[in-house]
View 1: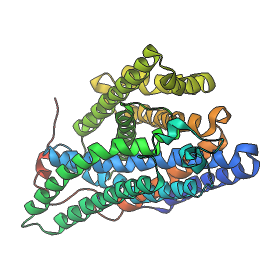
View 2 (view 1 turned 180 degrees about the vertical axis):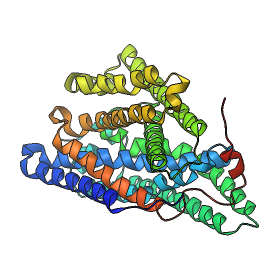
View 3 (view 1 turned 135 degrees about the vertical axis):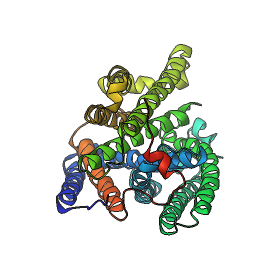
Length: 400
């Protein structure tokens, strides 16, 4: 039940990281007038996407504790392994934000001080009215607080989980401590996942706002993380390392993928339909930029992220078939990366954005870094936890 991060897997992650680095270099050298902006935009897209996957793994782990759920205990190491990327993802975001703050890129239009100067030709009344919230000192305080607390919770969950493995006679206190910690984390995350999405993504289109945006971003992160966990479970089970995971566990994970896909679709439709129907100028500009300049990608994300899971994961057998679930999951996974691309690119690149070698290469590079981090974390401990109060319940989990 121990996973060994072998040379073949390491080489694959290094190759992917090399592709990502080469793509960024080529983007800078051959990208033309908007080369720098395109490269930094690509880093933000994939950096946020994979950070969200790691963070949601911590969130999902916290749900298991808070709900006293027993079915998923055999998958706990997978959750912790995916969550191990959170600190690295946080560092990536800080690098992008620092580059924006020091004007190495112009991803965040509101960071230009001339927009707030009434004597300047670039004065923007709308952005100036948001200065009480969108100002660099306050924005950085929020950002560092969010990231610091997220990383702290991720590390403390992992530390106590490993300590539980070592003490067989008195494991209950560790479980109860993590249960209390999970309740605190879920309250903190419930608020800050929304405000962080305002700060890091919605503020790219500074004139625009949506009250449902935070939950829309959250649902996209959630489905992406669930799919990644499914793919890892199937990969390790295929290597004969997770025989304790049965069809019912796979079925439950498939139901999560199916259910959260519908949550994402509901939020996508609510936000789009209400803005389209009301036709308020300061709101519809967001969708005009995406539909007019990125038509195929915009509607393609809807097709992939809703139609595919609805048609292909409806049946019980589809959710239990690990190979089929992985195939559909991989398509959905890329579809939600495209969704993040659509959230960021029209705001950072305007009509000059492209979906090409720079964006795809950067995605592959971050995928390599992510897999290296997660697989390395999984190799450090046995894949099955010890001494958890609900371990036996999980091992005998069965759905008719």
